[in-house]
Image (cartoon, rainbow, N blue to C red; front, side):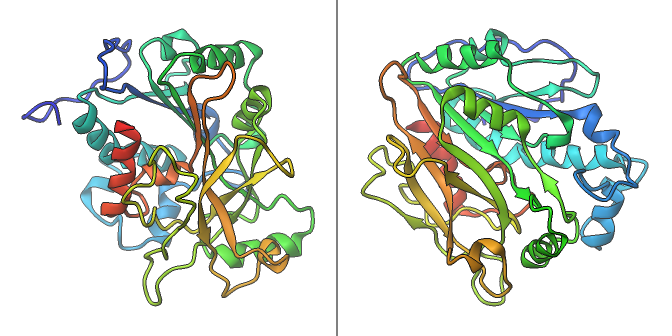
Length: 338
């Protein structure tokens, strides 16, 4: 950390711009959701919503049976679960600030106070690495505007920039209810409904940027027997000329990871750097088709007018809701220093 004493939390004030210093990257995180839309979802709806904190407490009992998460201290509805995502990002923020000397700025497309912030120079002017975490449900109808696509193209024309896209899972896209049920029992997470489809915003952004990638399914990673430690990733070290995965053997366990499918047969300039073996103990349409791994970490090096890198990595790799270890921290520091 860049400070020796704990600092108070700030909220609802303009971001203080960070000055550019060579070798000290400035990270910004952009949550694509409308916080009010997600928090105000009808809990009687079974599909396409986040869990309430009460549901989290029940399913994860007794992990959240402490004063910190009591009704006196913490929101108990869907908003409480959204706040868990914010809290779980703190370790990543601390690691990046320690490596770069710059605090990580965090933005929301629509925040708790209903303030809408599209991606524009207010975010991009003092950012070197922008991380877009696609956690807006598709039913929210959030889409990237032509102006946002143009702003990101301009951002990526700057030397040394990096765009990290993290479209989340797409569970239950099939109209066949039996297939949805198969998917549900494959991942085994009681908090994820039979249909939970993310993220119309990042999908539209990828289309606008001409990126041949799509987030599909929600697949359970293979783990070491009797544990929730994922087995090692299958890394394409020969393609990793920047060393993004130097010293990295695994990411994080999460019950339903997206598969980053390539939408063209031979896409130029897209390197699949890491694949995650899938838990094959329970069937899933993707594994029944013969697949045993998901594309987990992708890299598009600079090309043509694009001077910046584009990476694909799920948001759960940067949060600690689902655990973490030295390998994960090393990955964070690689992103901060490459």
